[in-house]
Length: 87
Image 1 (tube, rainbow, N blue to C red):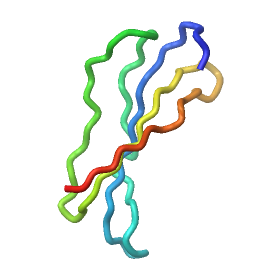
Image 2 (image 1 turned 60 degrees about the vertical axis):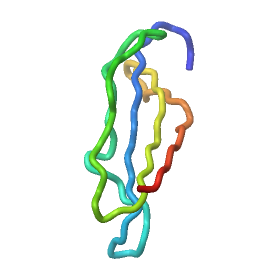
Image 3 (image 1 turned 90 degrees about the vertical axis):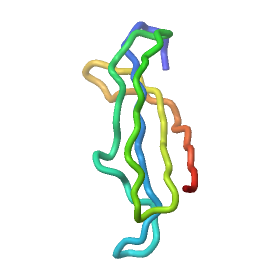
Image 4 (image 1 turned 120 degrees about the horizontal axis):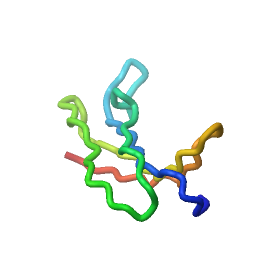
């Protein structure tokens, strides 16, 4: 990402390890992703991005990325950081 003063945001997609009609797999949560508010670079955003655990699942996964909000173009994002845990 370039240091051009464009607003940035964090996006998280949540998935749960569940039985589905096609077998056990990572099922996306709904809504599929959540975002923080846009902010200028190097400014702390005190926002929690979370979702409720699914009772039919045993694992959860979050794919986290930082994105630059670009006008009239696709947003540029970092590669996702993936965090998985069992409960």
